[in-house]
Amino acid sequence: MDFKYPQNLYRFQRRLTREVSIGSVSVGDQNPIRIQSMIIADTMDTDASVKEILELADAGCEIVRITAQTRRHAANLEHIARKVRSHGCQVPLVADIHFKPDAALEAAKWVDKVRVNPGNYADKKKFEIREYSDQQYLEELQRIREQFTPLVKICKERGVAMRIGTNHGSLSDRIMNRYGDTPRGMVESAMEFARIARELDYHEFVFSMKASNPKVMIIAYRLLVSVLEAEGTDWNYPLHLGVTEAGDGEDGRIKSAIGIGSLLMDGIGDTIRVSLTEDAVREVPVARALAAVCEREVKKDPINFHLESDPFDPFTYQRRLSKRIKVQGIYMGGKETVRVFTSEKKFDTVSHELLEMGEFQPEIISETSGLLAIDPRDDVAVSAINDRPDAVPVTLSDGLDVPVVSGFRLLASRVQPRHPLVIKDSLIPSTNPEKKSEETLLVAAANIGSLICDGICDGILVQGEEGPAKSLRLAYNILQSSGARIFKTDYVACPSCGRTLFDLQETTAKIRAATGHLKGVRIAVMGCIVNGPGEMADADFGYVGGAPDKINLYVGKQAVKFNIPQQEAVDRLIDLIKEHDRWMEGPDTIIDPV
Image: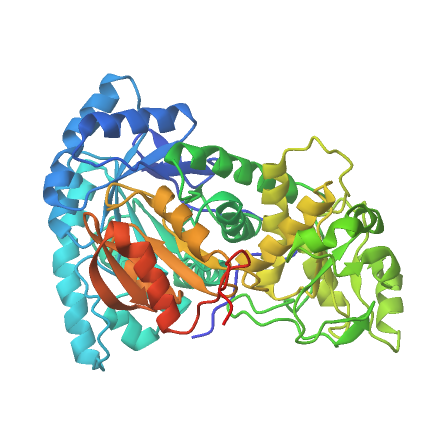
């Protein structure tokens, strides 16, 4: 079945959804984007859990999630909720459920919302390859209906909301064998559960389509919105946005801004969580800032062009194929890697220290590159570009008060594909060295990352960051996080929660220190098994908590080493990388002469 993306790619229009109440907070409809996070304390530790919840609420978190991995953990939510309320805190509490329907039934007695993952709630994930006949598939759906129905009924009776939250890394074998490891499979996995809920006249639910790969996540949400639109106007359920296992530091913020920001600027999303491998309270200001910068961006002058065709396929990543041209001795466009532009002033500032800048090298100076800047609404300027016999790099003119993403989409639509496009994060070059770097980072990642995931980028120019070296580092890190240009080790690291079996922040830092020089190697660091095996599919190697103080190591999604003592696990991970010929000595490693 063919689906049409209902969002306007040139003009912001927020997707109108029904309102869903989560305790004292409502999401969807005309409500603002709600900010969520998740505590990392053991759910059995009531005092520690309450302390974290109150800290998150004080930081501005509007909805707090708590893991409930067993019925015993779920039962303790009664004590957590009572103590939170005794402090006068009314922040809605959400139980996070994986694998255990009985835990969900218990949790629904005490919380405002229950999150279930269709991939592992009453479904199987053993990486089995088998063919399901239509009859066998229906039998599996009937079994799921029998397991899921009691939860829907208790949620309906108690006024408890629900999140039907698909994870790319934990699709069931049944879904995988029919739809593959695809956004379509993610959507269908959630729709199966939604249809059961609707059959029981239960509508207090939201969807999510989370993945560690921003491209996969963006396409999955777009497809979900299109499927819901095709089902009918009463399928207007709110959406929760998040990039799962985004990681920490600058990389985690960039990856989250690419995935979440792209969708917010398309008008999609009612609640968000920025998942960082850091203390949960640090997620909240990042999420709030991201929502704010996206809101400011879309409030610029709207583009009133109506074009019959879209500038890209919203459901399939395919890079716009421009002509390969040579600029300042470097090839760009065509199938060349995305190039990094800088201004002449910034280049002059860093030119004496290029050897010390490592991978963060300026490649093309914009003022002398032949780069042409136009307003894509100007018919004369567009015709002048298209009438040229040669292909030239093209960008948006500075000073235009249009949203960056829709402006470049219009440029891609009106300028002939043979001309390479150079994407900017901002149309106002910064001259303020005191500007907050995190805000600059979020704007750049959301704008440039969105366009890279749209496939309409041949070069990038970061203008919102005044610092020359910082702007180059930001450019390269956006390319890395969007998957456009891999120049360093890539990490998939989940945020901590009550299921985590080791100190994620400390361990991730230790793994980074040991493997950070392995260019192009992707390593996943998972605190527990919930998102472990599935997300391993996107990684070369995985480090997963299997039991307290015990680590399992993966190659791809296959576990190959089990129950390794935690104090040995990083060294054993290095040995595993060496076994597969992906190891190289670091730049500071001293090699004995032969």
